[in-house]
Length: 344
Image (cartoon, rainbow, N blue to C red):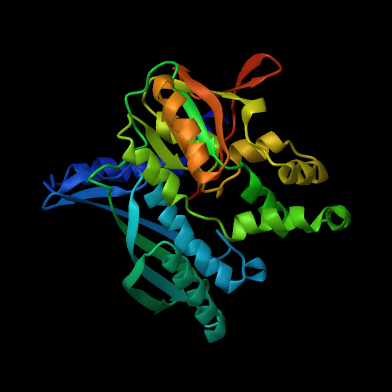
C-alpha cells in the first residue's frame, strides 16, 4: 500500500517530464511540468497556464450531474489551479467531445453554467473545440492567468523542519457528497432519509459545485512569502506527497486538528467509515493547502481569517523523513493510503 503513493499516474507524469526536458530549452519557460500551472515569461509578464479534463463515468455520472452544475464545476476545477499559484484567472479554452446520446438541451445548460462561473471570476472564454465522441462525454478546460506584480507561488519551496501546514475550509465534504450520490444500499438510503436535509444538501453541493479560492491564493502571493501552495484535488494525503516528494521531509498531521464539519461526521457514521478517512483521502475539495515558516504564520494567518471570514486551520508541521504521518492516540503512524489517482 505504501508504494501506491507513487502509482502509475505519477510515474507516467515523471516519464513525460524526463523525456520532454531532453528535447530543448525554451527561454520563455519559467516553470514547466510538475506544478499546478506552467509559467511562461512573455516580454517580462508572467502567464500561468493549466489544463484539466473530466470524463463521463470517471469524474462524473450523468444520472446525478445536472448539466448546469457540471459546467460550473468544469470551470472551477481549472480555475482552482490558478488559485493554487496565487494568480489571477483571465482567459479560458473549452473542448467538448460529445456523444450522440447527449441532448442539445444538456449542452446548452452546461455552457450556461460554465460561462456563469467564468463571469464570477472575470474570466473570458476565448475559444476551444467541439467534436463527436463514440460513447462518453469528455470535457477539457484550459485556463490562462496572470500573476500579481509577477508574484506567484509554487508547490515546492526550501522546506525546513518545523514549517507549519495550513488548509482552508473543511475537508472531506466533497467525498462525503459523492458517497451519498453513489449509494445503492437500501439500508443506508433509509438512514440517509433521516439525516438532516441541510446536511445532505451541503455535502452534495460541495461535490457538484465547488468554488475556487482565488482571493486567498492572491492574498498569500501578495505577501511575497517563502510559501508552498497547492489546491486539494486528489486528497490531502496525496497532495502533500506531491508537495514533499524528493524533498527529504515528511508531513506530521494532527488528526484532531483536521477541519471536519458536523455534516461529514454525520454521513461517515451512517456509512460506518472514519471521518478522518474522508478528510485525508477524499478528493475534489478544492480547498487550498500551504506550508509556511512559523514566524511568518503568526502574522499572516490571523490576517487571512479576518479578511475572508473563512476557516483556516493549522493541521500539522514538517519534519525530517518521508511520507505522511498522523498522530493517533499519542502515536505517530504512517498513512498507508492516498487519495484519488488514475489507474491505467
